[in-house]
Image (cartoon, rainbow, N blue to C red; front, side):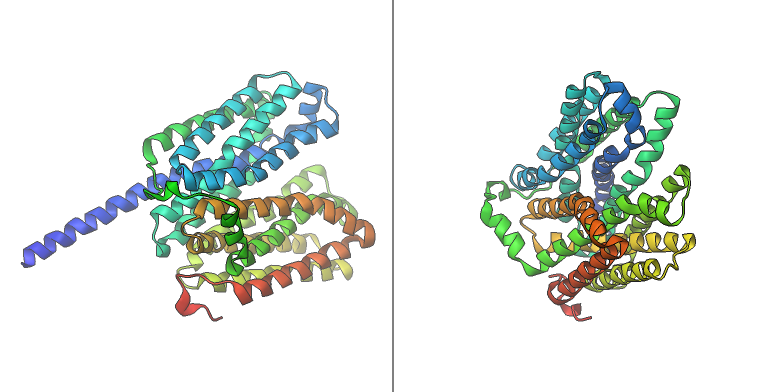
Length: 416
């Protein structure tokens, strides 16, 4: 009997190790697909002037190549999310990667502006599957107590995209030609497609594909106060993130008069901070509840913006302080992201893909409206209106999260 029990335990341990190894391999493939979306968004931004010369395009036409990508990426979330809950994760991701590959090849080969726009549209439509399917599969294959670590890896890869994109893009443009960035993207898409085709199995449970995704599904997601509180927080966090990104060059001109190279370097604290924060956030979930992490990060981000605004008002802002504020905002934002996605997956177990699609869309809307609303506020009352308003919004979102957010797998530790 003792030998039988030991044998059973040994077999069980080996099966668990095999599952962990298989899940890690799947996570690598998913993270590569999720990485490509934001990486594609920024990899050729250092070459925008060269793009204009190449296509004989005015600044509006050049900016459209970025805006169109972002708009399609945002709205396709409403298609990809439900599709992954209906048809399956694998059957959604693999065609998406192929569409992205075709779009990248078109952008690489064409000399026509209109065809280039078509290529960018296909890129956005295809790679929109990456982030949605990745989060849904993590929810499928990892138990609740293991999801936070996987989400941390996934979120880190997403935010490495904006960090590495401009660096690699500028190197490619300097040594060959800006269009070769799309050859690199094509190669990345091909590698990700082959890897996921070999490694990723269908993780959507059998029988769930018959479930219909209707307007009631979206109503269910948006009427859930816990889920809605996360989405409201994400909206204002990314609204703030893009407020800093968009208005940083003007702020530097106004207060510091730095060189163009220094301007580029000062974007790094914010984006690197987010990447570091996602790693920290994943590790914190071992010691703290996800609600505690989110509430602390929410109030912390609000306090960071308030102190930043006070330094502007009192004319106390120095360059080291600016770097500190940007890095702190990034780290706190990044630290809350694994908790946000993990809780959404936990709340909406049967509609993981759709819930992540709605969540991603709301984040994209926050990034899209930030330059418009920010410009209006700046015109009315300058820097102070811009950042004081951001503080108020973040503080109210923090209160909303504190009051309504809960994780169904942390019911015993929801009080903070």
